[in-house]
Length: 160
Image 1 (cartoon, rainbow, N blue to C red):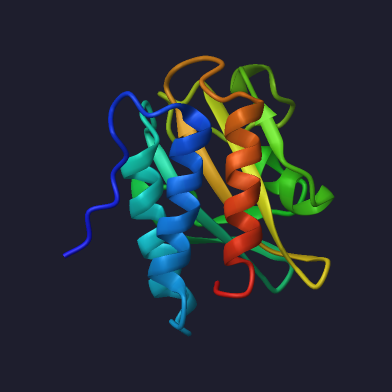
Image 2 (image 1 turned 45 degrees about the horizontal axis):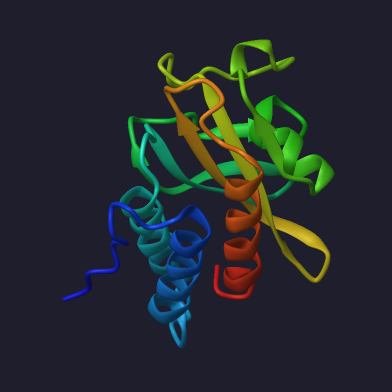
């Protein structure tokens, strides 16, 4: 049995260190990308409070296709450059959005989402997937969250 949850009073940088360590432990030696994404989505859900969606979109034939996630049903396909996820995939840069309703071209898969963090997963300089985190709380994510998820993306890049 796995129990990787951090303590409730754990400082954010330490929680992200523990999250990355847990993801590394769970995915090390496992070749199945879907299994690894599923376990990482579960870790994200357990480690990060105030989320309504956590998971992956994969780059498949030039568009984003829904991968493993936890949350309400989501958009299945997203064009490169469309919405927050498409912007992250097209630019290869993280998107930290305090108010998704002010983001040009935002795609509202879940009407309760108010803020979003999307981090590209890069392998050999190419975006292969994005990690998408949604929250009903405006400005839920900050630069510490971005740095933590970027570190996670780096560690799992060859495993998904």
